[in-house]
Amino acid sequence: MENTARVKSEEMVGRIDGRLMKNKVIKGIFLAATAFTTIILMVLLYRIISQGAPYLSWDFFQNFASRRPEQAGIKAAVIGTIWMMSVVIPTAAILGVGTAIYLEEYAKKSALTRWIQMNISNLAGVPSVVFGLLGLTIFVRVFGFGNTIIAAGFTMALLVLPVVIVASQEAIRAVPNELKEASFGLGATKWQTIYRVVLPYAIPGIATGSILAFSRAIGETAPLIVVGIPTFVAFLPSGYLDQFTALPMQIYNWTSRPQVEFHNLAAAGIIILLAVLILMNSVAVWIRNRFQAR
Amino acid sequence: MKPVKVLSLSALLGSALVLGACSDDAETGATTDEGTEGGGEQLQGEIAIDGSSTVYPIAEAVAEEFMLEQPDVQVTVGLSGTGGGFEKFIAGETQFSNASRPIKDEESQALADAGIEFTELQLAYDGLSVVVNKDNDWVDQLTVDELKKMWVDNGTAVKWSDVREGWPEEEIKFYSPGTDSGTYDYFNEVILEDAQINKTATLSEDDNVLVQGVTGDANAIGYFGYAYYLENKDNIKVVPIVNEAGEAVEPNAETIESGEYAPLSRPLFTYVSNAAIADEEAVAAYAQFTLENAAALAEDVGYVSLPEEKYTEQLETIEGLK
Image: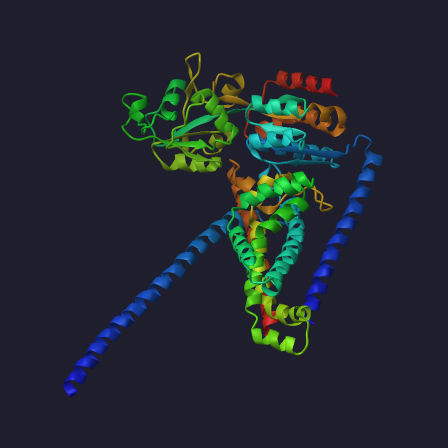
């Protein structure tokens, strides 16, 4: 008896060693994956910052584009991006959250809704150039907006809409059924339930997903090129039907120039773009924490 | 209560933006009024320019200078590429279309169909520079035939030794601008003559990628605008090209302007709508301003100016259209 027991426990110890070994290896793989991404990110950041930081100055924000790198600035692009986002955010948020609420709370689970659902998910993977072509045909030509803020804003809103819808749907779906049932049980109507129970619970998820989607709209170049957004604009827009330029357009142009100084300017532009993205993501985190705390 | 707050907040933001927009409108309205009263010569209007990214640096420079003189004329310059620019020009969306090659027959036909008459203006010269790696010590010069022999696809890999005897038996790596670019179109016209470009060639819309490619590979050959060579001349070697007179000529400001560097010197164009010149004072003024300043500004951004009389001739043409 004793013997067999000892053999067994030795076997077990042997197997435990194996498991612990495996445990370490797996941990190592994950650590390596994390380290690899972090290092790449650090190298990228270092390159961008060391190239671009010397060009960041008050003048850089105050000046329009110029053929002289030392006088070139990013004013029109920053202001233009803000204008464009003031179209993208409300449009995509209202349409996206509205669609998500309808699909999750109102629509019957029929073959048709499943088909719509599938198409929305697929749209999220369509290349951005395709949305640009759509924007060019519909907003620029058919609606006659021209290559203006509103045309570009709607195009970008369409581009991020599928992501906003899917993220909002996930957030709404995560609302516990008990809460909704309790609300109905107290005699609340559907809209009251959505407004008072579902949305407050879902807002952190909706905000996080949507803001990540909006960040994409800030960084996309391809649809803007197709829509025909100009790069050199030395005036500020005064309305939604004015022409404008955006950050990625200006950066794209600077990287394609022959002179090294312009490449450095592009790096400075990228720093601005990154700063805007970080700012937006912090807002997402802030909204999430604020609503989750309650 | 929370959603109410969010909603009212977004409503507030929205209205603030709209209000902001309105007040901006009012302000610009006021300043333009003052401008017209005070200046006399001050013009107003909007000028839309689009087209080749090769011509863009010149167009940007001209627009920049013009807006210093005429701040109330809103000039925008895009870079949809030569073909993309013509598409917008045909749709009547732009008054000027920049091109790094002459207009194609089908494009001028489409313009005729759309009832748009246009004038071709030459702005500057660019010398397509054929470049090889710094370590390439065998290529001393190339003829058009040799270029053709290596660049045209013949189904097999091309070695340097296939081009000229005594050159190494190493496979040539090709770097070419993308097929959408006017640069490719021009190379196609004078070298490839519509034959398929070597299928092993790396094509890129970004000329800096081509520079990197040629810098990093001893067996590489590529071509792009003169400005890109000029900026990188410490890292790559330019190949003298044999012209019709039988001389091997390197591209530089003199040989490009005099036409000695042939056939790879090409003019850069902008096309302007005749109706726009006749109807809009700002467009006519802009066309004049462009021709008066193109020489200096083109050199500023790395291109070669045309001979003086070319600009004068074209200015007269514009005068006639007004």
